[in-house]
Length: 274
Image (cartoon, rainbow, N blue to C red):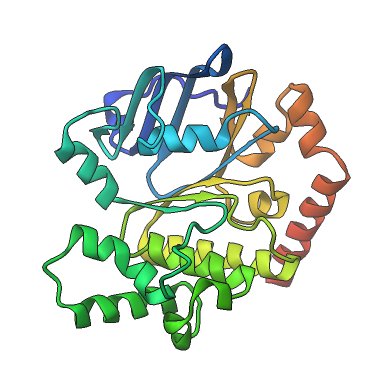
């Protein structure tokens, strides 16, 4: 039986970066989440999957405090994410980075100015020259050429905009990174390169990554565990081999269809080549 995440002990809780218990999200009469539980462990890349309408992005927004849930407890880096204290909200904001699905870059700002937005908000005491140098460092860290720092989002390809959004998400050196469909809209080569970048950054910076995706290649390439949303809950959270065996119609269809077999074979080939 796959790991369905019972309430952790005090000792195990020390390694939990995100802890969710009894989460409820409703939109009018529509119940999206009903008693959802989830743990995100320190240093892992956790893939979040589920069918359309299962509330993957709603879940992320609830954790970040962008969408207050109707009920439940959420802890992020030991801080109550539902707290109304400005100090608690600030602590979470300073220690989390977010890449939204469309990048959410400010169209009138250059890449460098976009990356500097969190720096200006949380570190207004920094001289402008320091902010520029830090932004340049993040741009390079995200795999963009140095000259991209002066370009507007409209002057970038889709893949470059994703990387610019990632550079902004890394601006404050957060230990916890949220990625919403980071490879959506990218060609297979660009998506594979982005996956490799995320894996490299996790190893180099010690990141914990909460990753929403539909991309099976991403799941098989870089995710340590996968959490499946269905029936208004997280029905299983486990390494992929265990998730594949979980007895649920959506899980079986998703992980044993032709696309899943292709992703599995690609992973096997990659292992043999390396």
